[in-house]
Image 1 (tube, rainbow, N blue to C red):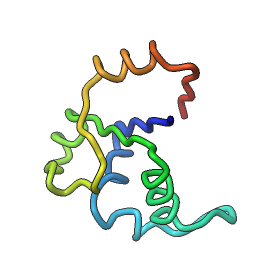
Image 2 (cartoon, rainbow, N blue to C red):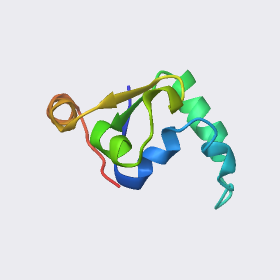
Image 3 (cartoon, one colour):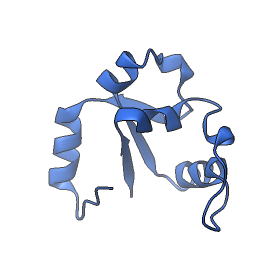
Image 4 (tube, one colour):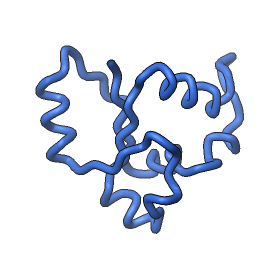
Length: 87
């Protein structure tokens, strides 16, 4: 199982309708398709609570399946994971 943690400006990806505005790049499918496929296959998307708050993004504006989180939960998830990739 994979978990994506969005922080900083990356939280905008979890906003409803945002992925549809992103152009496909590098031969990859459109971002909307990538996000949908990830979520349909059981991927988890966590969104930094303080990051959305400062950007005035409300929970109701997030895509289905996106979960608001904070640093403590992210640290626990990382400690319990088999692997962690940061990009």
